[in-house]
Image (cartoon, helix red, strand yellow):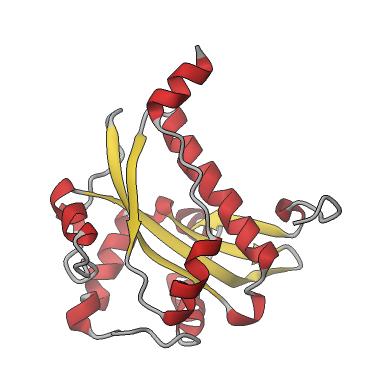
Length: 195
């Protein structure tokens, strides 16, 4: 963005899925909007074998609804234009992801390493999709800003984000991926800065 561009927060709002549900959204409405966004992309393999069952993902999302997010344009507050979902996962599953294995079908409740104690965590991006008609520098900037805030908030609460990974499953996101930035500052560097 140039210095003349307004900040992303002037145009966008972000809510966690938990906040959406608490404000009266129905899970069916959230799900149908997400399905519409995902259907705009050719996912490499969208089979149950690769992704797991819908029932499993409902369980996982219910348990991690505070780390799944929807982005809205302020002038269209009932229209999801992007969403992403991150989960802290066990070291074993994280290593499988790093080795190139698609772990989406394997993630279940017992694989989630919930943010409960102050220590280091490995985080996995389950999903990140943007409505094609809204895929632009401003949307990407808003997503980046929120990801920075989310991880910064985790670190400020003592949940150090050790490593982050994702499985990029569409050619569009594989090309778009480098535009996203994860400005995660290691805990040791934060400690030096705050001393």
